[in-house]
Length: 251
Image 1 (tube, one colour):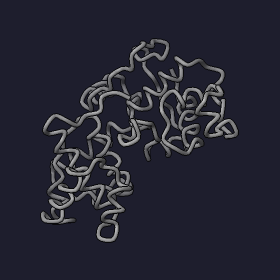
Image 2 (cartoon, rainbow, N blue to C red):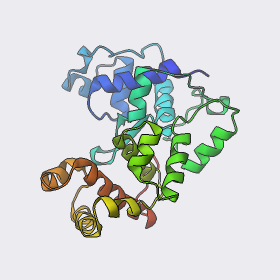
Image 3 (cartoon, one colour):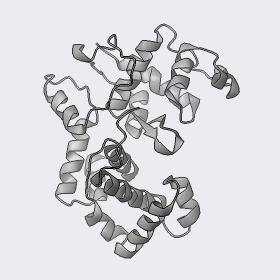
Image 4 (cartoon, helix red, strand yellow):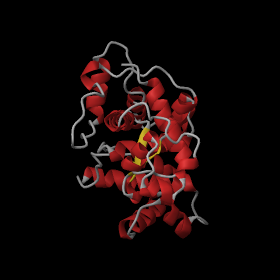
């Protein structure tokens, strides 16, 4: 099934909402329902309100699953796992490309429970089995990133070679941590931040009630740049992955 237009509508709607949105709020917005939250935030005045009214709730719930599993959406851990578009998702909305959902992932097949997110290696395996139909836009990029890290290539050099911004590489690393994939980037952070600064920031994230960047910027914004704080947070999250207590497996 060609899902290009549906996924583009989903991301455009989320961008129009202009804030992290829980799944039900997003579905209500797409269907043009005036729920309590829709009324509270006056979202019914948005241009894309009701853009998906030709389909039902099961359809959009499944499209959300597909978009999340393929790296076009991510969840905000500090905002009750509300959804926001990734950098790749925003690019997709601006210039949609063919997005084929194989028959075994038909959106007509829905379950009452939210499906578990596949580990990255399962995404890579699935992509290799469908003869060139790209159902995982980030899989190849993630493979390249993982290979670069294994070879201890500086993240800035990798970003430049792939035509990406460093913020997009950090988005990918955060996504991999959320999916439970451990990667050791200390070879890079030791160069950028140094061991002493890294230990200071790791102690901060460990003792803080939240690891959101806004709070970290309030605490250290006059000392560190945002990307440096994000790097430290990624190391912190990867350590939690390594210890088996940080992996978001559901939307």
